[in-house]
Image 1 (cartoon, rainbow, N blue to C red):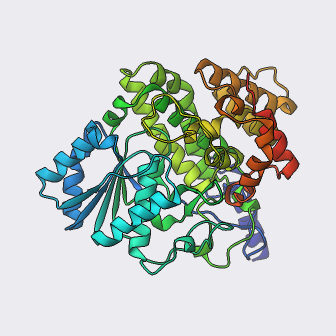
Image 2 (image 1 turned 180 degrees about the vertical axis):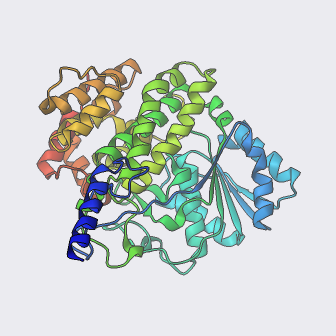
Length: 465
């Protein structure tokens, strides 16, 4: 009897050792050691994304979707510029064809503020809508998420769901109305995520709301909508995809993030790098490397623009569950403290640092800094972006990735660092101060950082070339 048990144990060990090790097929694959009990760091991650529908001209189906949902009063959100363009016209035609009753809100602000969120929330509360449609970039989709949330929880104070430490960061326990997102830029991936970002004007810093509960019900990815994007909007949107992929792939692993939640409702949307997000991040990065320059340089390159639209969603799936870290954490004060900078191709009446630009300007300095931890991942990213790493030393991973990013940005005529958009060394203390509250993302950096480190990173980002 004992001999039989020993033979069975040996056989099980042999099977385990011979098993396929890839994440798709293996039951033994794991990035973590087993943790049957809750400890200080997390032991699990979960994937939450919106349903996604892709195809040229697929926007025409949105009226049928709303019929299928039984929607009787729909809120259509967009901005003033988009309200006159083909993507909104395509949605309006579908709504009219299928007899959908709707009201349009086109006062969304590019790079939203707390006040612009509150204006949209007031419209949503008054309208008592039973479904929402957001047509636009991340600004529109994020605004619509917030409007849906607070209209569904009318007694809540605005700061209740805003990320701590600026807000209370309370979990969302109410049921929201269906939200269909129709992205018109290839950047934020907001159609896939439970995150809504805005400028908190009182503190002159960006923050947001992060909860799986606010993610769209459906994201309609219609590559026809990207054909009307001007060159610099394509570029800056693409830089957001680039940094989403790089940051989520190099983020602190989920099983090293603390604290471990006592209840799964408290597990953050941004959980740290994990085997599933890694797949999406790397795939998005490869598409960026192949298609972003083409998409920027030739508006008629439908293949490139369609692929970048998909890459935005792929990176959204990755970072929407893994998170981002220092490039995004540092970008929020760069946007929030903007002085007089007005970017080319943006038809706005206020100073503005586009989100993708604010993120990518610090990327060479950031990845040179973080590469001390997980240098293999940084080197792999550099290779995907075109670096020859055949003779590279692992200790040079940060320098190689930083240099690869500088060349990539130089080729695409990106502003020469923070100084080129109006900042100087005298602004560094304020930029650091604006980064410190962004713990939700900065704590996901694989390498912890001090205030002195942040100062050095901002200083190194003043000039890129």
